[in-house]
Image (tube, rainbow, N blue to C red; front, side, top):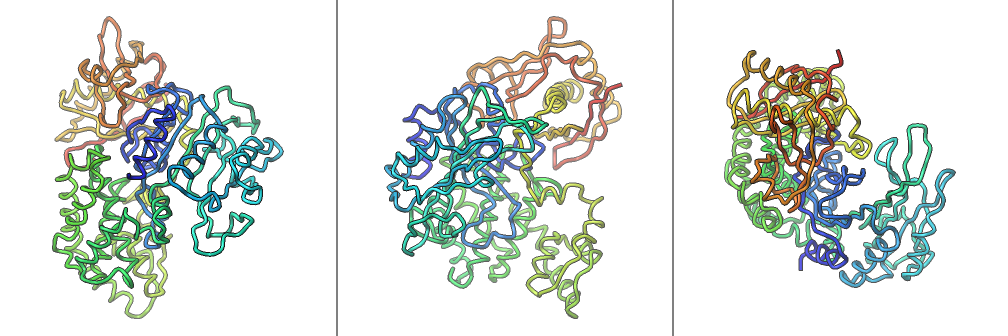
Length: 587
């Protein structure tokens, strides 16, 4: 049985409810371009909001991280990965969490106890040693020599303030060497496979630590790493998750995996991630900003490495790989099959765009580097602007020739052209749980008002296609086939402000998903929601219900809590999608 199925079945037997994987593009989270961890879509519930499925949850979550993109090509790194997780929202705590982790690993995955070791929180001046976790591991048969006490590596907090607490990490000895009697976390042969975080405390802005009245458990285990361990391979790409994909690439290139590992791993990883981004309901297309920039970069990097393997890049090599990946994952993620044509068209269209300039760009690069001179920021920008070379491709090509690129100089040239490029490349998770400030909560509600106003002004065919909120502004993407006129923008702005001044009630209720849809509630990603959903309605007797949406919140209680709404900019986002940037201002 697949690891995901084993995991879900086990935790369901322990009273957990399986929740669907959220899309890879998060809603209303400005800290990331993609969901980077299994806990991220659960932030409102870890903050105290009740979950429709109760207090015990489990899932497998699609995640994307691009902060270490340059590391992809080794035996362990991936940009897309699946995270297994189980949560307690004020229900069970350390004792059950540790016991069930141990039971699943040793009895259901049949991992020998002697290959396991753990770390626990050593304590500091503010928080005591985690003796509960330590003693629990001892009672389960983990020897004291296999338990390492650390401070820095076993304490979790999302940002500078907010929910925090000790965690205990489980390690597996991934080597054929004799297993050391004493566990050393710095020994690379010990690989972390599971992390149990215990959100027990709250840290305020003054640094004071206090006990939380409601304690949560958040756990995570990576599918790719654990599968490789269970199958006894030290190269993740030789596990059953990747073996057929690598074999297909080898067949297409007509060369063996051995000796060509790096390029084949990059192609396999990047095409898989591109498939999941392109299939996401957010409708991401390759572009020079945000998620579209990451998608473009991944596809173009895969093409570059296909060329390295002498694959005919004008053939359908990428579509073959993508089709195999869709067939592998469609059982778990229905959107892959539903959006198969979208995915294949995205790959094909981007390949056509890139292949037109790649040959010219490579010739230009060879000419530039013929004298073995380092590459200035101006030249790097020229390669981008004229030949579509992302900075990372220029850096990668230069590194292969032991040359350096003036990255700072490039950024100076590039800053105006691509406001978000560096954020997109970093893909940082800045701390979700520390977010959702009062002003961000107001912006969440403002997106609902804007969506409703656009339906009135532009037409009922308008639907949300994405949003991004910070404590300074909101950004809202919506389906629309034309640039808004000044009159349309003014009418939209005026209508939102009229509703704000009308002091409309923001009502929240829970109901079955089918009932919510029948009642007219709108949502952006219907498949991500569980059977019981949270619905936010805005209106009163005079106006009626002006907005009704499935949403995780948070929102204000009345629209009068919002300052004045002001549209700052309206522009194209992608084909058939427009973008509004707006602010809430106190007059």
